[in-house]
Image (cartoon, rainbow, N blue to C red):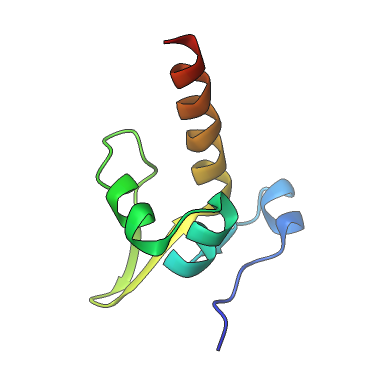
Length: 77
């Protein structure tokens, strides 16, 4: 069963963030799941939202902003 993601319109209206699980989050960045988990250790990565001991979500819009910032920093270096 694919992970559920809130529609983008919800976050634009200020109601709630677009949340996605690890598989969805990794797919949005175009990286593997193990690489995504390594990125979560970065202190600048958006905080993970733990719904239970084995259920994790991330704000997909914040993750995209983090990826843009990281990309810009790498190009400047």
